[in-house]
Amino acid sequence: MTLQIALGIPGLMSTWGIHALKVIADEAFDDYNYASVETLDDMRNAWTSRSSQNVILSSLYPDAALCAFLCRSKTPYIIFSESALDSIAHLIHQFAKQDIALVRSLSASIACVSQMRPHPFLVHLDRSKIGNVRIHRIIAQMCRQLGVSLTPAGMIRCLEQLGMDSTGSTTETGHIPTLEESAARISPHDVYQPDKVEGLLKIVQHAIEPFDGKILKGQVASLTWPQESFLLADKGGEPATGEIDLVGQARCLVYGPYFHLPAGEWNVRFFLDIDQNIYGQIFTIEIYSEDVLGKIRVRPSGTGSFAAETTFRVEGPKIPIEIRLFTETGSIEGAIAHWHAELSPVHSEIGTLEDYQAGSDSGPEQDTVEMKLESVNHQD
Image: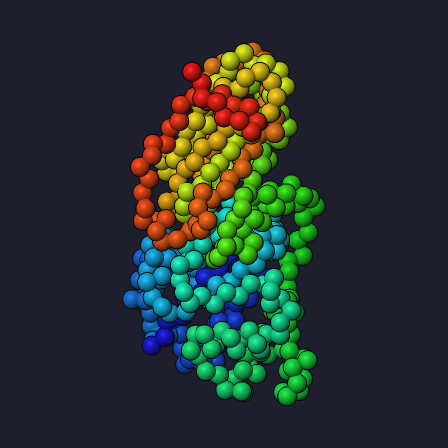
């Protein structure tokens, strides 16, 4: 009886890796069942409904209960990852579109997979590190870690299914493709060529790229959710580019970006520029994820660049974060610009099981504060 589990973020690495696992299973087992799961119930259903003694499961978006269950075992699991820019490029080609929903999906996967950080026996296959490695070495490592034995002839058959030229010598490795070559042969890139992705890539660079190499270990220093990742409430959810007009009644100005964060406590600083006096206007900023995680009221003093800071705790990485910016009174003039949020983990390590199980005693709301850039002054 065999149960093999692989996790990863969406991209070429996980697509190739899951395909490679199936190729190995075809060679190693008489039969097997495969299922993609996200929850513990999904896993239980896949196991109880199996028709074989051999089961392969994969998950790109494992929830908290599933990760907690997996972390209680010392069974080695494979994790597939790659850089944020490589992953988003793969998704753009896969879905033939350029949409911020792809960035949200990638952030969700990173936040979910990061819950596996406490597990002591993870086999981490990172495309950026093994892209030029010949695939017989990768297959051998996968087999070794998962306790699967292949005969020499079986290994050759696997390599042929993964793009190796069958006419090459069986005693030389030069004809064995690298990971990148194998992936290109078995799953060529879609011919879709986006005309313009600079805006999307900019968001990825600011919001997702800081997690490169830090999903399972290390510390993310900081990341930014740029203004372009937010949505304009006045314009039916259009991207918040340019100045954000304040003229009108008290209302929500912007909301979003519906990105995900690993579990733990986070510090967030909100920034905005005001180039004309808005006469005592007070802004309310809410951080929401199923419930209000934090709330702060800000009264800018005059014109210039302003920052507001607070902390909040993420308990469910699979639930997106929504930030809402409100005006508390109507305005007859004025606008804000360069609205964005900078986030950093409060503790040196994020995404542990303890982060999931711990609660927070502090209330989510803070009193009104009046803030200039780099300073915090509580309003009297």
